[in-house]
Structure formats: C-alpha cells, structure tokens
Length: 376
Image (cartoon, rainbow, N blue to C red; front, side, top):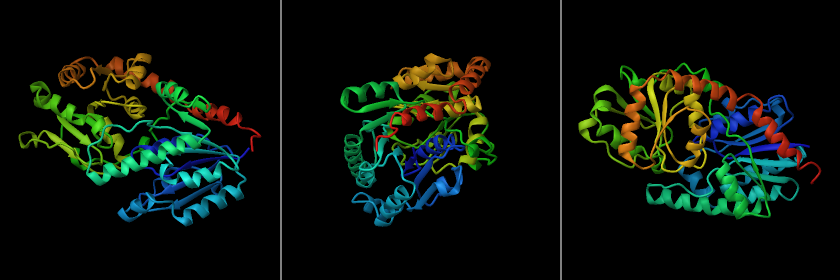
C-alpha cells in the first residue's frame, strides 16, 4: 500500500505540525507532496527516507498568487500532483494541512485512491482583519466545507471535534490521532537570540500568530491593570499577523511587540528566557502550543476552553483562568509567577516524555491507513 502525505501551506503553525508527522515515518516507504512558499519551510525541515519519495513544488505567497488561488490551483501544480500520484501508484492520500484552495485537484485523487482529510478547525475562529482578508477567509472556509463533504474519511486531533464530526457526518469514517509536538529538530537545537528581547529582563510571553480568537488583548488588559505584573515583568507579544488593538503609549517601554515571522531557531530563546507563557485563547479546537511550553519547561497559563482544560486535567502542566475574564487572568497570572514553579516544570517534563513520545503518531496513523488496504 502506497501512502501519500500532502500539505498545501506551512504558515500559522502548520509547518511544524506537518513536519513532525511526516518525519515520524522517516524509516518507512511513505511518500509526500508539499507546496512550499518563499520561506522554504518544507525543504528545510522534512526528512524523507528516500529523496525520490518526496515532491516539493514552489508557490510564493505573494498577493497575486493568493488571489489566483481563490479561483483554482495553478496548472503546473495540478500536473505535478497527478504525475507524482501516477508514478508512485498512490493508494491513500492523506491531506494534513488545509487543501481548501486545492479541493478540486484533491478530489480528482479520490477516483483512484482513498482520501483522508485532517480537520483542524471545523468552524472559523473569531477574526478581526481587513475586509479583503475576511472575504478570503470566508471563501476558504466555504471550500473547506466542500472538501469535508467530498472526503469519505476525516481525521482530527481533538476528542470534542471527533464527537462533532461523528454527528455531522454519520456516514463517513472519522478517526482520531494525537496532536504532534511542535518542537521540530530546528526548534530544539535553536541557538538564535531574539534581538527585541535582549536586555528586556524577566518577561511574560505570548507566542503565536496574532489572531482575534487568541485573546491577546485580554492578556494586555490583565497585564496593564495589575501593578505587580507591570512593576516586575515586561510583556512580550511575538508573532506575525495584523495587530487588531493599539498599545497605549504609557506602556510602550513595558510591552515588547515582535510583530514578524519568528524563525524556528529563535523559539528556544523566547521560551527559555520567559518567566512564563500565556495562551489566553477565547476558542481553541486543537493546538500544539503547550508542547512548546512542556519541552522548554516554561510555566504556563491557559484559558479554560475545553481543549486546554482537557490537557491540564491529564497533568498539572499549566494554570487555568476563566475564559474571557481579564480579572481571572490577572489573578491567575500573578499566582503563577509568585508560586514555586518546580512542581509544574517537573510535570511538564514528564508529560512531554509520555504524550509526545517518538513513534506514537506513526503507530496511530499506520493503524488508520491499514483499514484502507485494498480499497482501490
């Protein structure tokens, strides 16, 4: 049985997600088809067992290409995908990241191969962007809906989303596997200092793409209204994306905004120098951010949305606060920073070693793929 893992973009955390899964199969005869942009993330981080088992095509994420993709996949990518599937006699195609804008091309593969689609966010998160970006998001989710309907098998990393998918699509095969760690080899070995945090002193860290649903303005409000936090720590907001709220000039010397793409080699420095990390999400279907905290043993605070709450119930790897409540966030953050953090660090270390142990996802996925033996 010839299995193809596929991903059509690497931004917003999808790069580490895809690479961790593909690289689990480094000793298997697994194929890969990936669309890379000008960051060349997949070329840098994927480790195929044999070079001929992987095909990476280039499509820069400039404004023109983004616009054209809303209409259809470029012909050269369609040709490359068809040819690769034909040459490798692919039996199973597993779309790991999105595929929404390429749903027609992916749909063609379903005529000769079993099609599995990973569902990351069944419903769009709250967003606050320029009108044209909101329109683009609407189109993407519309096409995602079509992709979910045409794929006979859906995969998720969220127990809650698994239950929802079973209800929405009772005739489809729905599968679950663990969420991979976002700690790639490049992240783990990273030696790059972050220029913006040099000499910053102790700081509270938010790391991730800047989006409305991640509740960053709630963290900012909690921080700026707590004298203890203001006097003893700076707030570092690190990640690319559109800032949807303004930082008051009064706090310009206390809030460090790193509004850019953060290189994977900088992540170790960000976490190791942080007093704690905060993930104030107002909604979260599934996320791998706590894998970063656990790997670097950075004390953490999360909102009590079900996905995070479920992880914290398994082990005391983070404190929680009431979702959407700035007062609760402020009090919980101060408590976290004042308490002895050694027990949480020990729990994070043990949790990472167990939850993200090498080979776990490989076994889960091979079991899923095995159910498709001989279907085509």
